[in-house]
Each structure stands twice: as C-alpha cells, then as structure tokens.
Image (tube, rainbow, N blue to C red; front, side, top):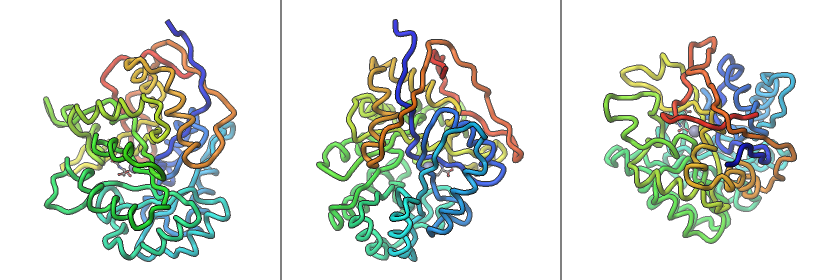
Length: 344
Ligand code: NCD
Ligand code: ZN
C-alpha cells in the first residue's frame, strides 16, 4: 500500500480570496499548499481595470505570511465597458493571466457582468489575438431556465456561439458540474479546457437537500445529480490534460451562509489536497493526482510547472470544522467521508 506520495506543488486555477480581513484570514490556507492561483475578480466593486488588478495583487502580497511562497495570477472582470487596450496592456505587462466572464446576475457579486454578449466582442477578439484565456462562469441567468439546467443551456446559447465567432479564443470552462460540460470539452479539438472543484467531485444535490437543507453544501453552479458527479470524477481522474483543479474555494462567514437567503460558496482551501488524494485513491487513480493538480493547468496556461514538491502521507489528517476570521467563523467544507491523507 502506498504510504507516501510526492507530487509537483499544486496550483489552484480558480480561487476567491476576497479582500481585507477575510483575505488575511484565508490566504495562508491556500499558500500553505498551493504555489499559484488564478484569483477571481468578483470583489465589490469588481476588479475591472489593469490598475485595479495591480492594486489587488499588491494587497494579496502584503497579506501573505512572511515565509510563504505563493504567486497570485490576476484576472480582470469582463464588463460591457471593458477596454480591449487596457486588457492587452495588463496582459503584456505580465499582470493578468485571464479575463473572467460572469453573465450578469449569475452568482455572488456578478451584477456588473455581461448581459449583451455582442458588447464584449471587441475584447474577445483582442484576447484571441494575444492568446489571453477567457474563464467562464457557465450558467445562463434566464429565470425561465431551471437552475439544474443552466450550465447545459449556457453551452448551447452562449459558449458555443462565442467559440464559433472567436475560434482562436482560448477558453476555460470554470467549475464544471455536468456530463454535458465534460462531453463538450472532450468534443473540442483546441482552445478549450475546464476546471473542476474539489466539492463537485464529492457531493451531489442530495447532500444539499436530502434529510434537511445544508447551506454549507450550496454553491454555484449548484451540485447536480449523481450521474454528473461520476462524469466529473471520470474526467478529473483520467489524466486528460484538458481537465484540472480549480477549487472555487469561496469563503463566506457562517452568518452569511445561514440566512433565509444564504450565500453560495464552499470553502475548501484548507483540506482540498487531503480530499483529492482520497477521491483519486478511491477511483484507483492516485497516479493521476499530480496531472490534475500540478501539470495540466500550467500546460493550458502556458506556464512552467512548479519546481517545488508537496508530499502527502497516509495518515488521517485533522482539520478544524471552521476557521476564525475577524468577520466571524467560516466553515471548512465537510467531505462527509473519512480522510486518510495528510499534507506532510
Ligand atoms: C462564488 C463566490 O462566493 O464568490 N460562489 C460560488 O458559489 N462558487 C462565486 C462563483 O464562483 O460563482
Ligand atoms: Zn468561483
């Protein structure tokens, strides 16, 4: 039985760090295990210009523990007013690594997102020209579309038309939750990849709704039925270079989660690597963990893999049920299964 596993240090290709006190509280959890992360720009107000991204990066660097080795990979929040020249300049300066598309109103802090996709066409054309990836929150916001169908409908109504108009645009479908998305990625021949979260490999919609409502399992896109979870597991553990980890670790205080209208997001930064080792071992794919967490992402983003390594040992880890922040406790995602791997 494998007792220890050493892999290249992982990266997180989709992460919410927030700002201020929350940033200072959650950042050490990511920096402890991950070398780099794609930083989501959905602050209030959102990070829409290169100057704002530079200032946010500085705040993240200032919040880092002294001994940490962590590089934030910044993104811009796409709006209908985004200036293609500003995007290109931020990319040329090495500041940003992606632009994030939120359909207006799709999720937490997405009010400034895109409503009319024709109005972002010039920016998308510029991004295609310079090779800057578009990260998509892939859910339509049409209230007549069932929430469990919003990802599949987004592919047909929004994503596929964008990719046909901009065939050279490099796209990352973020936090995919359906077999439809897995199939769509696999059917493409170029310029398409997807991130998968830790929690969507573990929970299906029963975890949220059966036996009482569990707000800590509520995130967006919402977890789907079991067949979709199994499709995500097969994709993640397959070694296919088009699939890689983006935790979507999204801290909200318990006070904001446990409301009559609670926030969406699971906080997984703390225990993700232990959970993933468990998931991959359960599927007989421990040998593919490194591809998913440490190789495929840099490959798609055109970055070198990390030199440093991370070692997991077969030993039951102990994680706190929540972390304390000045804003209040943030519950750590409960994988609802025993964990057998600790980060050394
Ligand atoms: C994210 C957040 O809280 O910022 N929430 C979530 O459920 N994933 C936003 C997002 O990525 O959709
Ligand atoms: Zn997210």
